Amino acid sequence: NYMRHTSDLPKEFLRAISVFESFYSYNTAISPDSKMEEIWSKTGNIGLFSPLGKLSPSKLSSGYGWRWSQAKTRRKVELSDNITSLELFKLVPKSKPKITSNKPPTLRLWQFNVFTEGENMKVVLWCEKGIDQEEQEE
Image 1 (cartoon, rainbow, N blue to C red):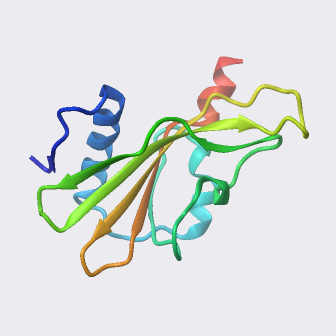
Image 2: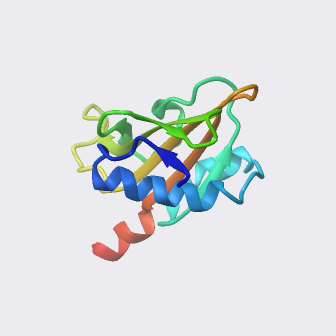
């Protein structure tokens, strides 16, 4: 098993970790920062990024009248290699009331901060529900 100490995690976190594992176990190429701008455009988009410093939700691109906001608590998980840990959390759109009274889209983005001994932090972003699904529902 790739992860340790996951028994107390909610199902949606376990599902997100499963997506992370299948992506991260074979993908080490750093995506260009430009891909981060469009990560939430399509359900299933996923990318590995190497930001300078911490990547806060406010630094992620968003749409008109809304910004990304952390939806639930952050969870930390140790990987079984004993040198890598993971901090993960879900991001959802939150409206900027001074700009628009429109409801924000119902998007879901997961952020995984990957900490490996002796390396700079990496970030994996996974779009669980993108703007493409939002448009289909209208």
